[in-house]
Structures are given as C-alpha cells and as structure tokens.
Image 1 (spheres, rainbow, N blue to C red):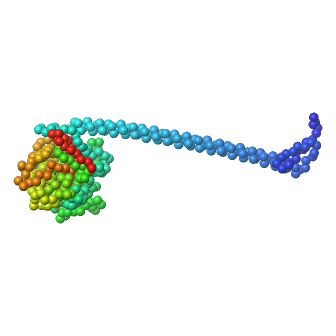
Image 2 (cartoon, one colour; image 1 turned 90 degrees about the vertical axis):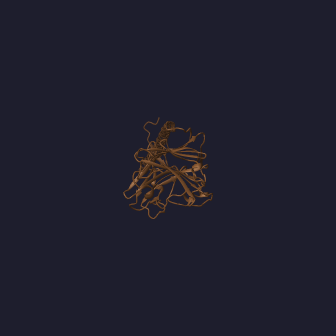
Image 3 (cartoon, rainbow, N blue to C red; image 1 turned 60 degrees about the vertical axis):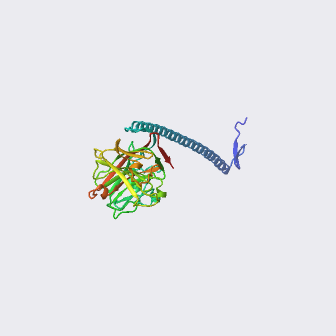
Length: 384
C-alpha cells in the first residue's frame, strides 16, 4: 500500500513517532539513535538486576541448604555421640555392678549383706574428688574448720587439697601425693601446726556429707613406700563439732608404720569422762596390730571395720586384727560408738610413729575404692 513512500521517525520525548513522507533532520536522527541506545541500556540493566537478584536468591537458598545440612549432620553426630556415650555408660555401670557383686566380701563368722554405699573414684585423670561426697582439707585443729582434728605436733606436713587427684583409670583410683618441699608451697596449702613442716600431703573426708552407723566398711588401698610415711583410714564421730574429741570417739581402721610395711595397726580412741570439749587427760585408747605377711606398699590390701552396737572389730584381708567392746575398755571409758561416724583418708609424715623421714622424697597412697555393707542385718548410710 505504501510502496515507494518514504517514512521518517521523529523522537517525541521518550517515544519514536513514524511519519510518512516527512524528511528527518540530522538532530532528529541522532536523538532517535540515542533514545534507542538508552532503551537498550535500560533493558540490559534491568535484565542484569533481575539476574543478580536471582543469583543472590539461589546463593541464599544454597547457603541455607548447606547450613541445614550442617545442622542436621551436627545433630546426627551429637545424637550418635550421645547414644555411644549412653552405651558406654551402661556398659561401665554393668561392669561396675558385676565387679561389686564379685568383690562382695566373705569373712568367716560375719554375715555381710547388701551394699549400702560405694565410692570407686571414677573420673578423668587429674580430676578432683566428688564434692558431693568428699572434702579435701588443710591442716587444722579446730573441729568446725574441717570436721575434726588433723596435723599434730609430730606431723611434718602441710595438707593441700591439690595433693589428692583421681588417676583417670577405668577402675578409678584416688591418689594422695606426698612430696618434700623443694620450692614454693601450693597456693592451697594450709598451715604448719608442728615445729616445722618439710612435706606437702593430703587429707580428705566425708564430714557433713556422708555418715555411717554400723555395718561392714572396707577400703582397698595401696600404701605409700618409705620410712616416715604414716597413712591412715579412720573415722570420727559425726558429733565432733559439738562434743569435741575424744568424746566424739575415733576408730582407726588402719594405720601403717612406714618403717614397718609388713604390719597394720588399728585403734579405738575414747574419753573417760562425759564432758564435752574436754581434752586430753581423759583420752584413752586400745590398739592392736597384725603381721600382714606382705609389704603393704607393694600391692593393694583390704582394710575393714565390722561395726555393730557395742562391738567394733578390725580386719585386714579378712583376717581379724582385734576387737573392742565396752567391757574391754578402761572401767571409766565412755562408749561413743553407737552413733554416726564419717570417713577419713590421709597420709602424714611422722617420725615418731613411722620412723625417720630423712631419706623420704615423695610417695603415693592409692585408694581404689571404699564400700559400706549391711552387717548382720544392720547398717545405715546418711547423705546430706
């Protein structure tokens, strides 16, 4: 229809208007070209922006997917670790239960019943004792400060809580380290209450946390090596903070003379007058000893107390050391042993009791476990 007819394009604002038969000026042609270029640039910019938004959305989605995957993998790993830990804990609990059954003591003449309480000192290497059961102590003589006296005139030690740690073994062991002082004292060391102190050692007890009344109480211990060591596993009356010592009573299940590691000694300490917080002319004790026929610092041995109303008997490896009853005490003795008592472990350095410590440099006392059983149907454990 428009054959051989000339059309022109005129720029009007942002529009291009084609007209028939009108010649275009050079300026109009340039304006049209610029407008076309601008429109193409704007279209390209819009496309680029849309592509960028799309790419950012895809990247965000990929990141979210990766984070979700990482979270799911972490949760799966945590669940797997928790399941493995549960299996491990159950296996350890079963192994411990089996060990407790297999190690239930059998002593001639005694009817040892159910397990009432046990401590196997399980934990990581270098860990502290279970604070719900034990308190590691400094040297004190004021009962309120530490649940009973420790550090006496002949003991050449500072007590420091840091000197007892768990060994981290599968069976669990608490280790008291006794070391000659060759440098600064540990920051947690207590006072020296003797003429001089040349060693740092440890003492820990259940005072204010766990108490016992009657039963069969036993610990498996490897004693320290060397003259001068004075290790002990003993008990004090739970009422010591109100009545003082010796009216509280004291049962020394075992004490070892470091210069004679083939024998164990047990003792029962009591008062001869019923006067609270009075010491010490009223202090009496009975003592017995037994040849173990083995070096108690070379291997573990069992040290035990068979405790009933009006009856105390001490054992080593199931062998009777000696017994105490009201009738075997001094005629004026006060029987303070039908009440609650708490446990104590410590290693002192004591030249009067255990020989010269001149050559002693260091030693370890290792406590594998301690347990309390019913005896003849009697025995109670009190936790606080």
